[in-house]
Length: 303
Length: 114
Image (tube, rainbow over all chains, first blue to last red; front, side):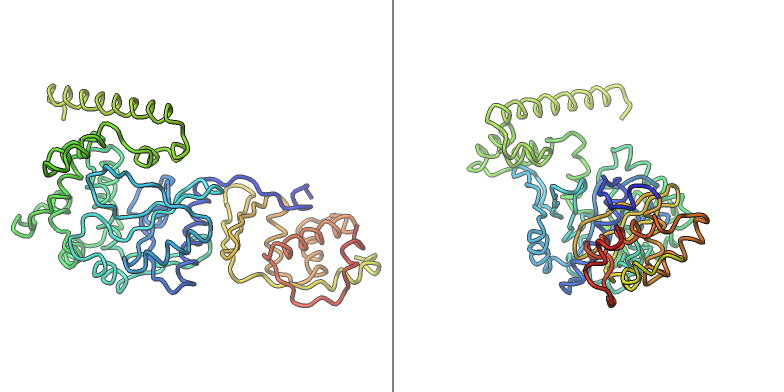
């Protein structure tokens, strides 16, 4: 008998283990509070055959917007802190990310999912009424049914289609033998108003679908898709601000606040002014370099 | 199991598993992670700990567990293993992974097995 049987020892968890345990636990906390949650993406989408097998970076759950404040209090009481938001972002936030000093992964609590143009509460109810069960870490949790899960996977990839990983995810999804019939995805997309957003993918897997099936997409969706270079959306948004708000908007573009900087590195919340300025300079240089390389790529016809 | 009489109180230790346990068995290495959903303290079990944890489900007292263990590991010196298994079970009880069903023995059993 080895020494570990004398006294159980806590060791570090793998990423997969953390994700699985926290998924089960998020469901437990919500269920105990009477909150309905659907587990999105991650290992359960892998298990459903709709996502390539790779470790997830965080736990993704979806709940009704009206339950978000209650769940926020539950997580706060358990030591989970919301990550700061980028106050210069051009987009509305669709989720809140929580971190905990004892865990290496975040919990992303979605109160809506970008791409659905139907009201978030109605989208959740529609998905909830068609939910399925799945088991993770020995615990039964609720997940969207296959058409909803495939739609979420597709929308997630289509939101930033220029990312190689998202292109790979979309190819995987298109070729999956577990993909539900296209007509079921179309029916789901029609009910939740995301057919326009799904159009490039749906017409790839079903070229016979007529253009007339697809409505025009929301302008916010197009802006999200165009954010290949971080900060470009911020620049565009600042340029379109009313004149009286322009000075502050431009100031925030070039001089992001402490909380905006801490979105990418939580340690910056307590950084010195010198460290913050160094990070501001680094971010500017990084954005400029990416913009130049993108411009050159387009110029050489590779885009 | 012939020398169990001095520790008879220990063998009276009975348990049941807590109901709110998440468990991640690993098929590719001898490792299991368990966590009480209401407690958020994961525990990683490796080696023999995995086997002992498995036995806490099929067995509900130490005597039964040691008998099962003897079948899994023939030749295991139960006199030496007994106190270790007891400590393992007690630590799981302390952490809430197991819950006392009923205890006939007294607190002295904790040192009686040393």
